[in-house]
Image 1: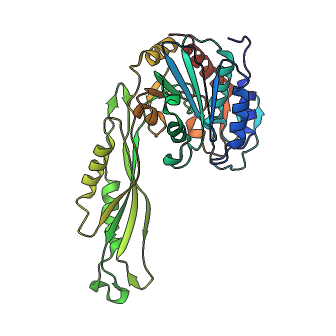
Image 2: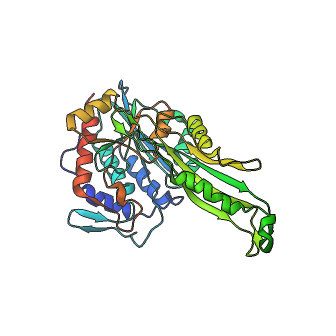
Image 3: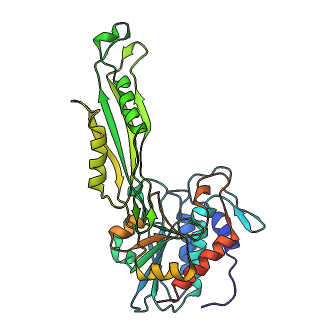
Length: 357
């Protein structure tokens, strides 16, 4: 391992300076690939705009460290700015700070006691089916396998275990079209939305505790649409709903639950369409590598209420956690920033992970 403390704040600033909004990650992937290829202890693969670098030391265990290279669109914050021990700029928290930590770990740990795979992947911030992880999987799924995976999503150095699943559905309610002057001759589909929205507004979400992590489900409307013209009773109205569900439910169970909530409102001719769905992930806190890390550092552990790629790794048979620098509440905001202390703390924890069996 190389001696001397790294300047992770400056390294993160250099990555922020390379624009990499979703579907435009090529320049950053080029930079990362070029750097990884200077490290003779790593085997490097370039798949599209994804870079996988890994040791092949024949160790008994392998850890996967993953981070996405893309950001959301800029909001006047594309130029990095360091003010004391704080870096301001697009992607500083989500998640170029995590990428800087990964890169520094790759440089320093040349003969770790376990094998390490570093996965830098594209297109995490857009539709799930466009993720660079799927591109890597299609090319060679073995590149993503390991005993445990750590994704550098911003957690400020805490462990966010598992993640909630997501299912998005579109409900179409029907009616009978008529002239507004003779509204009693029709049936207003937009008015029918009122009952459905009231059911969603009264919904009491579950808050199950799983392996000590408190999850908090949700079921809500995100978009409504209806209407024909100012003088027409509308015969069709739609509402998009989203359900965030805890990892003690699978996709089939989550969908069945939503349909049961909607059932009292639905009539013949109404439809419910699944738009998108992603599974939840069970907290990997019982894995020895994770449990040891939490115990040695006294890490805060909490449930991941959003969805992350830990769900993909879990589905591939790789227990996974979220652990990275930065505050998730600042992600995607104009004031996105990361503190030096958060970077250093995360680097120290992951250094420990790569040096203890």
